[in-house]
Structures are given as C-alpha cells and as structure tokens.
Length: 397
Image 1 (cartoon, rainbow, N blue to C red):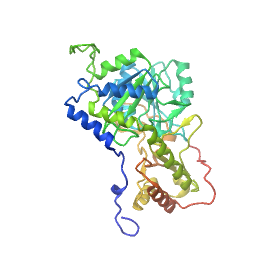
Image 2: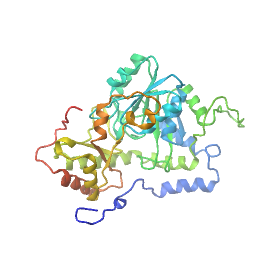
Image 3: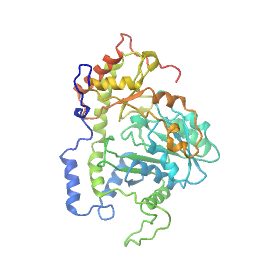
C-alpha cells in the first residue's frame, strides 16, 4: 500500500527484455526449420563467430547459462580437487558455486568500495601455492580494475577469469570486456543487457587448446571431430549446449548491443543528474579507463547517517511506485552453502556494508523519462534533498 492507502503494483513498471519483429522472426525461422539443436543447425556456430568478433578474440563456446560458462572455464583450466580459486564477496552465487562443483575451494575476498568489483590488493593477499585462478566480476556494468588484476596475475602466474555476465558492451582501456583475461564468461539470462531467450551463456578465449577442452566439457567429454559423431567420451563432461533458437535470438540481440548500452548510459546520466543533490547517497561512477554499460543502476545509502535501514528505504520507495531492490543482501562469505562446506569465515567489511546499504534501480531501454522521474522523485521523497552536491564521500568502507 502507498502512504495514501492506494495499492502499488510494481508489475506495471516497464520490463526487460523487449523483442522486435527481427528477434521474433529469427526464432520463428529456426522453429520452422525443424533443426533445433547445435548439432543440426548452424545458428550456434554463427552466434559464436559473431560474439568472438565483437569481443575481439579467436574462440567462443556457447553454453546454456552463465554459471555453466564459469564451470566450463574452470574445467578448461583443469582446476579441481585441492585447488583454490579467488572470487569477490559481493556478487551472484553463480560466480562461485562452479568452484565447488569442480571440487576446488572458493577463497572469498573483499571488493572496492567505489566500483563494488573485486579489490586487486585483497586478491593478491589471498594467493597461496594452491591458487589456480582469480575470477574478476565486472559488476552491474562496471569494469573491474583489469590492469591491476593482470599485474597481480602476472606476478604470481595465476590466470584471470573475467565474469562478464553483467557487463556486455562495457570496455576497459578501450577493449571489450572478455578480452583482457585468459578467458571470459558471459550470461544471457532473461533481463541481462542482451538475452538468448531466458537462459544462455558463452566462454571466450584466444587460447585454442583451452577452447578445445571447453568444447569437450560442454558436450559430454566428446572430442570435436569432422564427419560422423562417434559418441566417444574421453573425459567427464556435461550437456551444456545452447539451442539453435537461443543462438538465433542471440545473433539479433548482439547486433543491438551497442545501441542498448547507449540508452542505458543516457538513462544513467539523467538519473545521476536527478539524484546527485541528495546527501548520504553514493551514486555509481564511471572510473578511469572504464566504459560502463549500466546493467543496473546501483546506489548506496548511508543508513546510519540518514537514520533509515535499507529495508525501510526500499519498502518506502516501492510504496511510491518505484522498483528499488536490495543488492546482494547475503554476500558470498555468509552464504549457508559455503559455510556447510567448512569454508573459513572470511573478513569482507566492504561487502558486509554493501549488503546492508546497496540497492538497484532499472535503467534498461524500456525505461523512459517518465519512469526515471518517478524513481528519482520517490527517492527524493524518502531521503530528502540537499542544496549541496553529493561529493561521493562515504565513511570508512
């Protein structure tokens, strides 16, 4: 209920994705072909070639989710029992759960208080002789500090896996994300910047041997051969293939990726202009060398200073018709699934603070000026505005 007693229905707020005739026709054409799988239809290899070209790498392996992409990358790097993989505390569980599926140990480290991405210094401090990879999550459309992470990896001989699930279309130092590490992993889930129809993912790399191992892992451990399929599995693998209909939609969506990002950036600029006068609200920033793709517009409320909890804040904003939602209320180092494995309780104060202070707003291309005004007005009403411009300072963490 709103403060006036009127019930608020957030389902009326514009949703993402929105498909045009080209998207629908591409899926329809595959459906009518009666060739629906990667094995019988070339749509998947066409999508792989297009995404590899966009990212600027030699190889792309399409899979059925972003989580599968992470696991396939770990398997391709031959990570398993007794190995450790470093991951950030403030991210989706699908970044780290594949580490467990590979029999390895997740080592959870803190994040940067401005970008919310993995802290390179924290990652370096966590390296041991058992460390086999660092997963750099490009969060909310914000690139991680890839130059510093690459230097850490080079000093210790540890490969960097890029998790690009939330940031297709973003760039670091002028290069697309996914092209900086040894391997990059994408997700095309329903409301991501582009989608392959609800689920989907991909792995990209310049390493031909790594790509071959990932292709085997994707298809039951079978080697890729010309001609007749032999149904001979050389190692343990899974069916992580993408369907032809997913790939056909992915091709049309990929062609629109840059235009989608342009609209998100425009919306972010308008929202920042409307909110920057609010004291005690940390807004997203585009950091040096970064080109932000704004999957989510994520802010941080100084709850102590403003005397409001994040639950009270989001509830009141929602009552005014704006879809503000908490961002990762349970950080990875506090997830029950990890504590039950005997994983140490890691100290991640920034991630803990974000779990109690961060919220997200949608700024996808279906959101227009009216919706942006609604969201900014609701936040002003709940928090109040100040005349002084917000300087972005934010306590100790």
